[in-house]
Length: 291
Image (cartoon, rainbow, N blue to C red):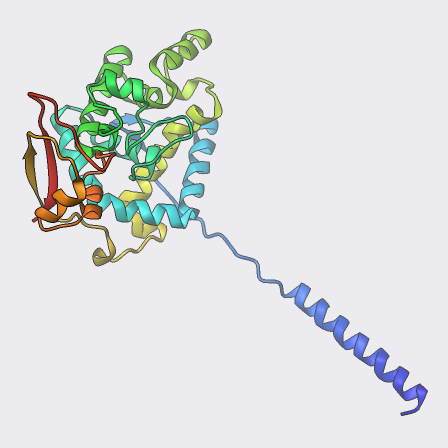
């Protein structure tokens, strides 16, 4: 091949490759976000959200967009809610706490027994001191923050105490994040009475809006693109309850005697934190095992 022809082919190749890059750049795929309209009027526990306020509207929009597009977590909480909400709902109702507070549990823990860096644990994310104040046992062997029924009862006690103080469920919800004293300090310092009129730190300022967003999306999941078949939702395992009046030296052996295994005992009773259970005189526990 002569030098002139070789040079011509090299130039032709460069032009061809350059053209490919130009074409690729001009046809780069851009993901388009589809806006899903949500109600212009929302409420939390029957208390209206002032969405006519531009700041309120924008903060709500942020949480709606974030959670609509946080597909993995939102999908998981919808699946878990099918198992967890039937336990939480009747306890809230029995205590006179609005049903919307189940969505507070969603944003606290994504409906799992989460552990925070600060030491809060369980679905309702109680700190050890607060858990004990509200009647839960917290020790090396037993941690009732992981007991869904008992921690929900304790959460109800806190929420009702907060309602006595504020007389407003929206502020009650905010106080679960910011503390009753913390919320009160902000309201007094800024001379306002509404959550939506106050300027809070970032986390507390987003807190109620996150609850509102998850409530709207979870109640209307298909509308927001979460089409999860019923048979893919998580379900509870049918169990029976055993009254435990004496210490259990080996939970693995105990499980085997009950026709199950150690893993199943721990999954069904996450409040059991050790391989044994000491039962003090006059004390009893209830352990669930598969039917």
